[in-house]
Structure formats: C-alpha cells, structure tokens
Image 1 (cartoon, helix red, strand yellow):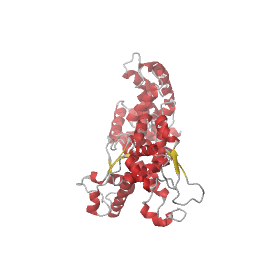
Image 2: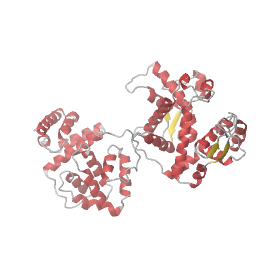
Image 3: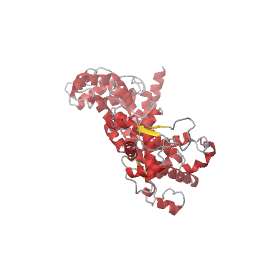
Image 4: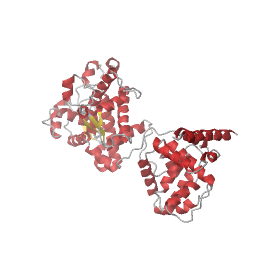
Length: 488
C-alpha cells in the first residue's frame, strides 16, 4: 500500500544568517581571510599559486602560530583555501614556458569583499567552495605516497599509485551521508557525537551480519584510521566537531587502532559530530548530486496538495513544524481559506489518500476555530465528513450531526489504511486495529461492504495484527469477501 518514501528524513536547518556566522567563524576560513588581508604586492607566490616557503614563517606569525611546530603547514593550508575560494587572485608567471620556480603575482579577490558586504547567501556560497576544496584534500593521498610518481609535466600516475579520486570521493560522501542520516534519525544520537568505530562499521559490516569476523574487524580498523585522517582535515572548515583517535592507542596496539572491546572507553577511538553548518553543507552536496534531501520549511510556500504529500512520511514533530510554517505564511485572516485548501487536497481514492487525510486532520488541529466554516462545509462529503465530525467534536462544537453508519465504517477503514501506510509502531497499530474493530458489534459483517479502495488490504492487515485468533480469522474471511466483491 505504501507509496515511495523519501530516502532521508527532513533536516531542520539554522537560518542562513546563523549559518553564515558559523561559516565565518570556521577556523580554516577565518585564517584564509586573515592571510588574504595580509597579502600585498611584495607577497611571493609560486607558479602554482602557493605561498613560497620563505614566506610561510611570516604568514604563520601573522596567524599567531609562529610558535606552533605546525604553524607553517597551517598557514600554507589557509593560503590554498584563500586562493581556492577567490579571496585572493593569483596570476601565473608570464609566458607559457615559465620555469617551475618562477613567481606569480597576487591581488585581492572579489570574494574577500563579499564576506563583509555580501549577503548570507554570498558567504555560504564562498564557504561551500571552501568545503569542496577541503573535501578534495581529505580524499587525496599523502604527498609521500605519490612524490615519486609525478611526471615532468606535473601529472600524477594514479594507476601506479592505485588511487581512484572518484572512488575516494564517493567513499567519503558515503561516510558523511551515513553521519547525516544518524544525526537525523529519531533513534540516532541527536546532539551526541557518533563513535568513530560505529561510523566505520556502518561502511563495512553488512546489515544482516551477526558477529563480525576477524577479517571484517580488520576492515573496520582500517576504515577507522582512514576516517581519522579525513576528519582531521575536515574539522577546520567547520563541518564537524571531531575528537581524534587517541595516539596512545597506536603505540599500544600497533599501526592501527582495533575497534574497542565492550569494557573500553569508546571515546578514545574517536568521536565525531556534525555541526549545524555541516548539516547544511552535506545537504547541499547531496542536492547537487540529485539526492532527495528535504529540509523543514521547503513546503511552506507550496500548495496544500504538495504539503500533504510532502509530509506523508515525516516524523511527527517535523510534520507538525512544517504545517505550522505553512499556516504561518497564510496568517489568521486566511485561516478559513487554508482549511478549505487542506480539505480539498485530502480528497482522493489513490493509495496515498488515507495518509493525506490523516495529516489533514492533524493540520486542521493547528488552524483554530477560524476553520469551522470550512470544516462544516464538508460534513456531507463521503471522504471528509468523518474527519470533519471528529474535528468539530474535539472542539466541543454544537449541532454536529450524527454520522451515517456507512460513514463510520468508511472512516474506520480509512484510518487503519493511513496508519498501515505510515508504518507506525506495531503495538500502537495493534491497539488501533483492535479498538476500531471492537467498537461495533458485527464489524466484519459490515466492513467488507465498505466502498473504500483499501478495504481488502485493511481487513487482511487486521487478520495479521489482531491478537484474538477468532477475530483475526473473521477478518481474513471478510477480506476474502471484499476481494471477491471487488472483482465482480
């Protein structure tokens, strides 16, 4: 019965202004900005746009890293980001046959001004360029791995290196996608970080595997160390908060840290958490790759039909927030019109219609008394009359007409069909099934005659779910009658 579900749950993003502030505060981008403002006519850069080695100490000193043994490396990294994001423009040495040690010239890039005078969208666009550059760095092999494989023209023999750039990028994107999903999952870590061994296992251990084999554990260990290197590169751009693998473990256990035993402190093996900026950045990358990655608020300016279909499989809180945003754009003055639009969109005999009606009823609960005229207008509608009566009764409205018996049974079938499509909690579904079928004597004598396209499927589900064997058998018999009737 279920329609196709989105591959990812909706994400609740911070505002663009908040995300832009986070982007500007990311350590690597902040350093890149400082170096872009520090650079001048006398700044010397190599043929590839890199800051020449002789200038790295001064750059590190400007960043306050003069006493850090890795200060020069941090300065070089920040300079590359400034160039990659257009904060600095580098002109190559004149002439096509310039020597490798020739120096280029550097000027302030247009994007440097946008970081202070541009919009939040401008800032985020520059940050996304930086994320793309850092992502490429995180998936590149260490220089020592290919120094001997660089040709005279500067090209790298990747085949001899046994390194596939696209495969490496896809692997890291898969890891970040898993981390994104874990962060959004209702059963996930919420604001808690994810242990690196668990994230590595999500990429290696098959879902149907019981106790991992030694070979699989070895693969998990290898992936852990690979991710440790990559997250160390990614963290400064602000995408993750990362606690690296305890280096003492590498000394204690060899070159690779094995996954922790049950009684070990898992935090020593690395902990990673997506930041709000990271959620935004990964979602943008997934959207660019064509992945369905919804965000709360996407539907606020759409029609009621798009809204009810869009929130069909949202978690309850996200669906409620999305509806609240949708109603908020219409205001109290348009509440009645909004209710009428929701009711109109809830009609239909397609597979998804029962779930639309369920979400319509939940959405109407947020509208307020202004919706009453629109709700009363559908009291005689065979598809909406039942939910209209429920809404009015819950608000203590007067003069609510009693529903005809056919509408009572139709609403029972429609309600069960919606919950089956929603794939809710099994115990709650059993209670619903038993409650609705037990409200009326001779329920199954009437239910199989209900003119609802989901009647046979609903009765079959009652037969599977009802814990009373006799009633379950009656439900299966009624389902057979309903299917036979549908064929006639």
